[in-house]
Length: 495
Image (cartoon, rainbow, N blue to C red; front, side):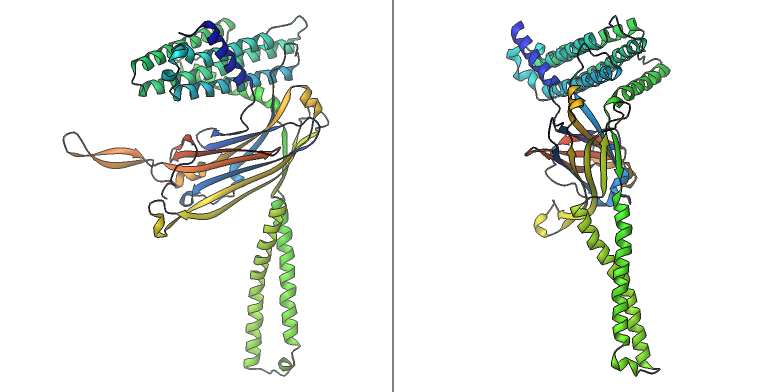
């Protein structure tokens, strides 16, 4: 068994990690239809900071819907920083502190999941068996306790507005803690289902009881405070609980979001380029026709084949005008997008927080879609290839220093992007396939197997001469997004 000092030291290390900074690049699933990636960029203290964000998706070509990538992409920008201190007494500071705590709980959940799935139960027996697995849980509970002392404890000079906000913070923290504990228990049950060693199973069962005890304690706390508690026997109560959780989440997370303003300059550029190339093509065709009309031989033409030839030539030149216009427009558009962008975006501080609405981020964005091919993974030497649709999003931005934000504890600007993949689902194959098998009696039977697809995702961020990258494989089927796996699959999914 581990000594109390060793356990306390490990818990302190876990607490320091969940209080630390988020990963620069994160890729995950937002809901059943949307992929989400986020990038955290430091807020500079004095000088502006340039950065670059690139995201790439490889989608099966036969499932791509006839939509522009911009219709499926959503962008959000928010601020992030440390938990508010105990002397914070404004509504916004309380809300910022509550949101920061939820991020700490997310990191504790990730650490707990990573610890369990890495088989740390067996490897760390020398550190105290199942007690070692409770480090992340204990760190999360301790963070919640400290946050409640700082954010929910009333002061003598609190107004009715502040008192109400403290109560909402208390309820919101309770909801997010229950979500974290529920996810932890789900992970324990998943690992327990595949565990074989008796020591491992015993440690996991004890951990599940520990999580259950924490959930029971939180339910008792909610009943004492008069908060709504979920009840499996009452669908109405569950509905109200979920609705209340959504309202609280929006209430608190809204304080960190910046106002985004985007100008779709690609539409204006397309219109201008189309008019310019049409003018140039028309002038070129008119010049050629004028030169032909002044030719010495053409002046002596009479009715007959000469006039017919001139008409055919004029018609060919007129038809070529549209082709010249399209070629010129494509060339100019490529040059403009290469050196400029499709959209200009500005992120401002909300007016209620600062009436001047200062700009925090300026960015140029582009999102392109093209069809590419790669060698057939079944037999690449044969020269066969498979087509896939490559979606590339490029974001070149600049963060401007804001000393007043830094003074309130803001340390990073976090960009969140969500890509809607629901247009793909109706175009995928049937959700279940009937696969012929032999049963134990040697008779032919059928088993249902899902037809799954894989989308490769790569997100990169560059700033301050550093490069950060996250690669993942998104698994989906006709019913929606199923899971996300770290890294790329060794071979592409056959189309």
